[in-house]
Image 1 (cartoon, rainbow, N blue to C red):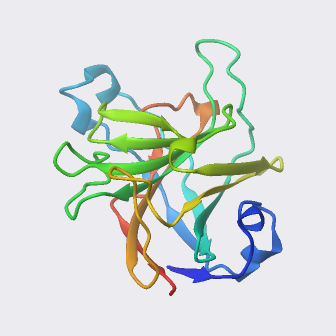
Image 2 (cartoon, helix red, strand yellow; image 1 turned 45 degrees about the horizontal axis):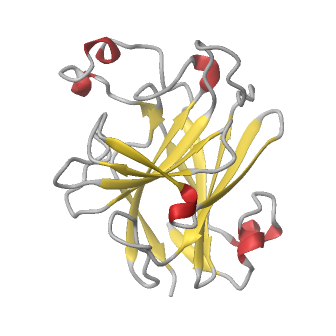
Length: 215
């Protein structure tokens, strides 16, 4: 997938309904239930979980203006779950995962020796999280403002539309860096709150795919 360069402002790129998104290449990713058998040692209960990963497809596109990169996700979800009203209620969420090492594994959310950086949105929180991931259960949620990560989302009764945006330059180690003219790997995960999805109970796109960032 190509991340096209445009002249639009950061504010316009952050708007999921902005006309500039008509210029973007759209990639439709098939999603599947996260394989939870791999977490048996850390969480036997979660490893036996079934019925998760009901979102089976997400559309992804991305643009940059030389200063910020914006990634837009859209997926069908007839129920808008954005309020935590009780302990057994969960919200919709999504994340884009980037490797921080050559051999980072998306399925395990990285490892201590090959970590990953995730941009994580929850429908009930106005600010996204910029996550450092070093394997299942080994994540650190950092406020989005630490890396100037921003989010905007909308739900039209049938689809979620979501944009995550951040400067191309990283604020330091542990944050993904984007370089125009060079490829970047990514993976996607989506949680359906109506289906009681949280933690490892999610749909995901599998191991990393590649986006080419236009110079």
